[in-house]
Length: 377
Image (cartoon, rainbow, N blue to C red; front, side, top):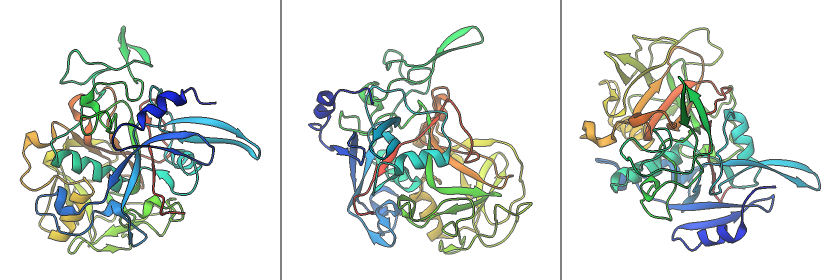
């Protein structure tokens, strides 16, 4: 049974924008509601289209509920068997050592409408934070933020490195207000650091960017296995979704074509259609430096920016506060993690992006977060 106090959870509901949702296991999660907005509300030069996070299966939704805390997994004994599911609860050691597919399963076990965070949802929150000047801090420096010396969270994980005892993961939601996405008690916690978080609806195949349309990844009926036909590439010229040019079953990358791919040019990740540097290794650059070639049209750029995988127009070094972009474009499939971990320093943050890992990877610094859309199911 989960180790929590319902009375303390009830207090969370008095915070503006916080909601307690009980799932099919009759256990609660604390959520924050994110109302729908347009690309133009959060992007410089953004169009008036609804942000992708608020369109599921072609239908606009009024908003989505997002876990206030990085999730933990608890097993509940039900009459028809044990159910291991994900929960958003304060003061917990976040789930870790869990792969992409298992993370999704733990979220979907909660019932209809529940799903693992999609990259579209993460992007909506990240873009809102930047637009409103609330770039959240977090546990990216062994229990504290690199920009803070006195504020710390409750440590739940310690280890020894080079004869030095380090703090790793901290208890969910126990950092200062600067760790909240809107700098209030009602905000979303730990989007910067603590553990990396799996994101659904996005992957790279031999360096080709592939996504599910809009926020279709929130619906479990749209499969995300390696061979799913829901995966689409992006036409570089007009931003439309098309059949991929690269497939997991291919023995090597297709280095040129019409779809958006990632090339590493002079130490910078570059969206393009022709790859000149493909390597099975992790390579990186600051997020604010990620760029495009002339092959990427205006509509495609807006889509990339709406997914928080390309910096906004007029970006400067200070715009993203050191967040980093890591990727491996030389292997068949790589899934996506966001946010950073306790030891990524300034490279962690709401725009931090990691496309290095297979869906099977597990790590003590890799977790996830669930979300809920009542219109699904």
